[in-house]
Amino acid sequence: MSLLPEDYRLAWRKRLARQRLEWASAVLIVICALVLGMGTWHKLSLISAKKTLLEKVRAGQRAFDENDLSLRTW
Image 1: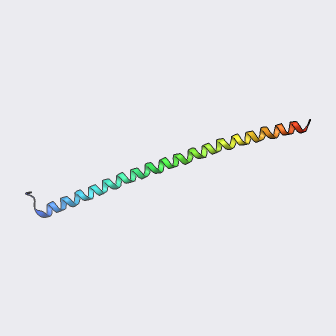
Image 2 (image 1 turned 90 degrees about the horizontal axis):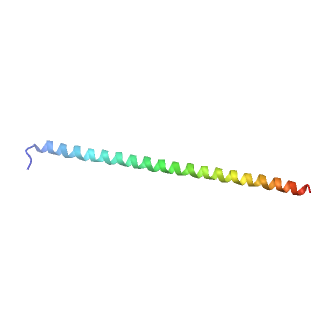
């Protein structure tokens, strides 16, 4: 049994519930930001890998074209 009046106890419980909700919201925002950041990093790494692969394909095509041209001149 508390010595505080009922309206004070009710207000205190509401404040605690509101604080818990605010903390839960803050944690959820941080989690969402982390997931978004990880997704962005993953997409950027995929773009980088695709650019590297495309450059390798272009280099291979250039080598093939040079080889083909040298064979035709014979």
